[in-house]
Length: 355
Ligand code: 1HN
Image 1 (cartoon, rainbow, N blue to C red):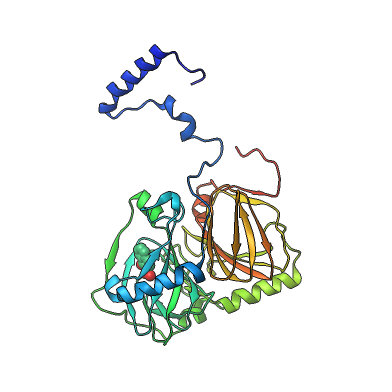
Image 2 (cartoon, rainbow, N blue to C red):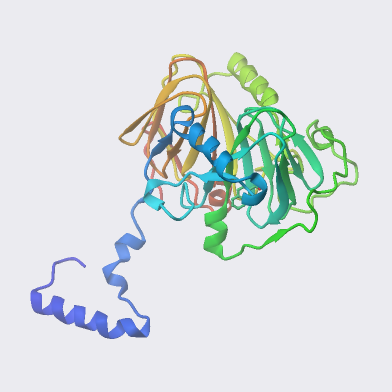
């Protein structure tokens, strides 16, 4: 509405709104501009969790309160402070920290929601996805795509912690989620450990293999390989002023995203790098893998170190500065936004007409 109405008109309109409300009707003209904002008006807050000093001890407390088997998954959900009670770290994504203690198993199940794991701590526990066992090390990126059976086990003598990222809020929004538990305690492992990587992680695929799902047939992306690629880029490529040296994880069979709803990235910031401002419409969750530095997210300064986790809300400018050589892992709903023609980014102070 252009001008504020006089009191009588305002009252008349309010009465009218009350009369139409029981019919399930509401006046668009009161909310039009909020419904169609000029640019993303996210409710999300920038937020950081300090794993070593705030979270680790609490997670280990949970290890004394409940077993992985009883919990099914022993996870502390990371909730955006603007979305408490909604199991959401962004509008579309869920994140949690999962603990599995020596000797524990988390039983098999499957669901419509796609999941990623990013290993934070421990070494040698496993996730089995549709009968393929992936042994996990810190920095490994592991996926359990929609509808695939998955379970976890820790046969080592140290606790294992990873970050789970799932598209739970997105699937809930679409009312499209199904889930199923298994009738047996563990999946039958049809193939030897490492089979999945050998089969799909080496630029080869069985000759008659055909994708049955839109997700990557490769379930595990070990950090040793990601790190090597980052080092190679740092050696041979000019640095990107916004990202440092940044990679996206790919489905080796298509070159597309590993899963249709969640994209993941890893980037190296050389020591002393100061990035230009950058923003995108995909709210992003970052995990610090190596190094120390600071990121300014909108008006908020985050100082970070390995295992810290922080959130960059949609269309909020970010700049990174590394005090030592640093590696950041991140994930977002970019594949969804790109498939729908919605994704936008702005690098530095470039000017563009967004419509
Ligand atoms: C799930 O399946 C896992 O398999 C972790 O480790 C967290 C949160 C909600 C729904 C399913 C897992 C989950 C989840």
